[in-house]
Image (cartoon, rainbow, N blue to C red; front, side, top):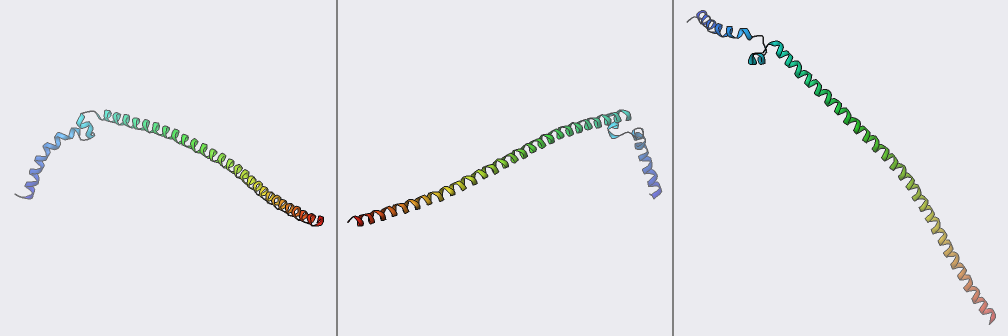
Length: 135
């Protein structure tokens, strides 16, 4: 069989199949399956797009609300940390004052103990010298 006769035979066998599908050729696949008109398919697509857009707006709104809550919580924490820092600085100042007071008290106590010792020594010395003078 020659190439020309083979091509003609294949064309005849496919012509019948192509003619059967030509009426629905320009319709979307969904429309072919459901035998709906192109306008109904576009309307369906528009509805799906509107639903997706609505859900996206809702999601964005919820996301913005959550972000505002998070921002508020962070601001509150920053204020708390700032207040804690101020209280800590005040407490450190008080601790330093107490330590300084304690150091002064310790120095004063040591001075008083030395002075008491000196007075005792002097008193003992005087009593010895008084005892020697009386003999």
